[in-house]
Length: 410
Ligand SMILES: Cc1cc2nc3c(=O)[nH]c(=O)nc-3n(C[C@H](O)[C@H](O)[C@H](O)COP(=O)(O)OP(=O)(O)OC[C@H]3O[C@@H](n4cnc5c(N)ncnc54)[C@H](O)[C@@H]3O)c2cc1C
Image (tube, rainbow, N blue to C red; front, top):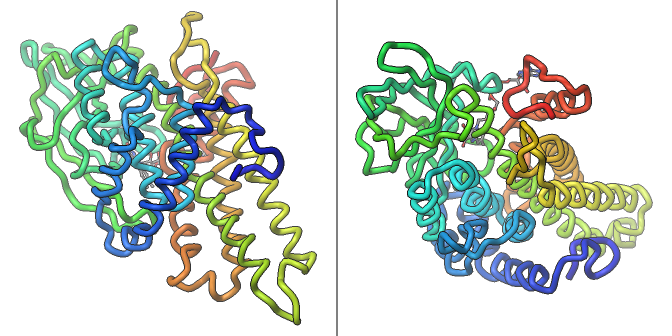
């Protein structure tokens, strides 16, 4: 079944993509869906779902063939993420991070050894953690205080991050810190790789009790004289000064992925509401026969069509980087537009889907209640809807705005 209103293949997906989508849908419906409520209730990381994703070849999808991966496109990964998120937001998010998160930055800027290391992790099912946000540096991420001091050819990292998705379950971490040279001079912000249980000085603080997406921990991550060698420094070609902007630019693929999870959740919610509206009778007929409800369903479907088109377009975009160099990432402005629109539309769609169920939608017996809590996150994490609007404004005004979190103006 297509997720679109009309046509069986409205986005002109290739036969291989349609096959991939069908395989993802089957796994989602047969294996992931039956566990979704339990994952939410127990708040336990669904290792069995991770194994199922890995077995199906749905982790490390974007790793190129020379590193042992299948070399899928971002759109291919999006098709898989969307199907997972339709039935389980947590598994959708795991699929994003195992295909389009920190791995994108390492693949783009890492040395051959780092690219191989990160690829091996995602290909074996790891969901790398990306550690940027700090208690006093959220939207203004470049105000971070975590620091890496050079000692000979090594770096000693000290500081604290919070709201780190997968902290304590992820093996590989990409950590951002301000870098200081031996003489104390500041070089800029850089990225460092660290591995849980292997890198001394890397530990975890408290877990955040979250509103939704409860099966994946949001943790404090602590660095106490965490020492890393030069082989674990992820240095973009333009060096420390531009390092943060470069590394954050890689994050645009994650943004498209995050929007896709919202899209999947909303599509799942809409389909449940549509089915329910045909069966539930009031005033002697199915509630789907009332125009008030028909218009709600029509609006939901319209928003989903628009969100899906924008998300797929962003997934297919390839920007031109600063200095005219081709960028391997989705276009930053399109990625921002896709995440803003999709997150906001999806929150509205899930809310109206819940409304369609009346009181039943408000019961914890119903998946809508979980989906409503899950989808609320997507205007916040990975760049808030306000900050992303500033990214779009930067592009259309053609200037770097002081309050932008990252990225470039082109
Ligand atoms: C579930 C979840 C998972 C997350 N996972 C990760 C992760 O894995 N790694 C990681 O590093 N971080 C992660 N984060 C953190 C996330 O990126 C930050 O929450 C986000 O960047 C916002 O920072 P903040 O929460 O400190 O809000 P603040 O920056 O304090 O913002 C508060 C409010 O002010 C608004 N605001 C701030 N500045 C401006 C401005 N210039 N113009 C207009 N409005 C503005 C914001 O939009 C927001 O509404 C996650 C967050 C959540 C909720």
